[in-house]
Length: 129
Image (cartoon, rainbow, N blue to C red; front, side, top):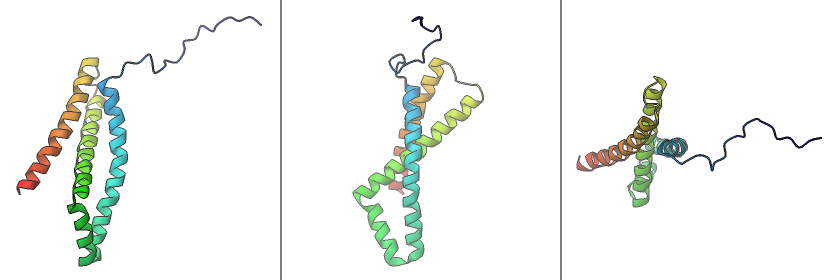
């Protein structure tokens, strides 16, 4: 048997790819999707506490009013807005728009900026009112 190498191309290895913002946003989109499951469990807990009576609701409100609870709510808000912005980005891509290298990078950065700015603005508005 001869040791002739196959002429078939090898699958690209991770070292071939250069890390790009679109890759980071794809990873973050998946992570925020998973985080939304956890956050939704907390929303259900809050709703069940509201339906269970004053003592349960007070306990849940005390948790969400704590620094740790507010941090979780801030993260949940960001995850929700980031996941939504990523979904809108994919919807735009489904139309065939923004698929070029530079355009997709701008969309990826815009997704991150929009989610961060949106989260901060939302929390500022809630804090004011």
